[in-house]
Length: 391
Image 1: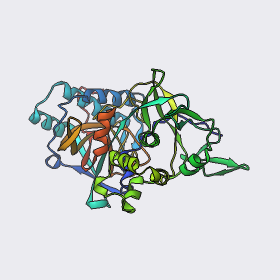
Image 2: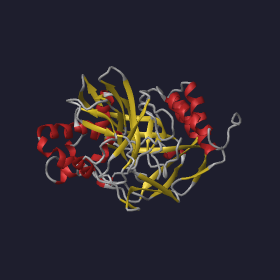
Image 3: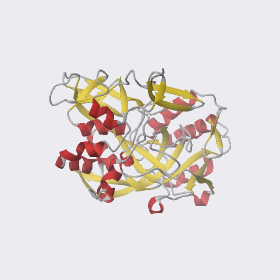
Image 4: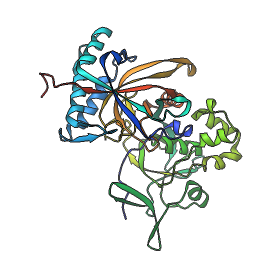
């Protein structure tokens, strides 16, 4: 029987809303005049930080390791060269013209064009995720009545040929693990509780985000992160709410779902149990969120994608829209144009048509992440020929 190896797993708010993206695409290398007009709405803030984390990850792998993605391949050395070139470029604080000249001279821009453009002819859906903060208790004491579980002894994880099978043993035969409904209605994981929260929807949000900082009633803080899942298919409660006429698609966000459940507590279990998937956790330090590269994520710069399409540690350029807030109230949208790095993934991110932008930690980040479900473009930036000053 396998244990529960650590792997941070971020599910996004958007999987509440939409199905899987396209799973095939054309890989288009743009000539310089086809490339976007590069800019950075964050004025390079956080870019050196995110590049340093990608460099640290890539330096730990053999430079000639070849990563196959979307058909072509790229070496770790090429990804490392791209990150280092951008580091040097950012340190010169280039103006718009110098930035665009340098990018076109030093990088190839590659874009995925899905064969199936998906809902509303969308090429790329850009969503957001974050690290929430919750108040919690290490003992089951009102109002902290809703448990978060560690991996139970009954969970069996087997890996063979690069594929993982999750289940439980029944008379020596591996069977599917229990669903969310079965676990919660039958109290089937008694003894595996780690901590208790005061709101069942907070537990659900924790399952969706995969990570949180917990402020415990004893005054301490602890981090909690994804450890494993029950192997069941994720099913969208947002889709259920729309399909059953409870909400309109355009109004579905994490906040509106929370409000709906607060106004209709008798429907809470029916709605939450539409999702068979269930997440198990382990304790961590109460520090920054960590992506699947094992490196801290950078707010506004780290992205989660299907890494079969976008190689880990890759430099990219993202265009979309972002919500604008004033005094905690959303007032509109503005352009999002910035350099990002591939540093995370998630099972809801399937195919080239999904990008999840990490917004950071806490309530403000959660508001922005919860609003993101926008069209966008993502360009991988790969190095042209080796520069004289590169080893």
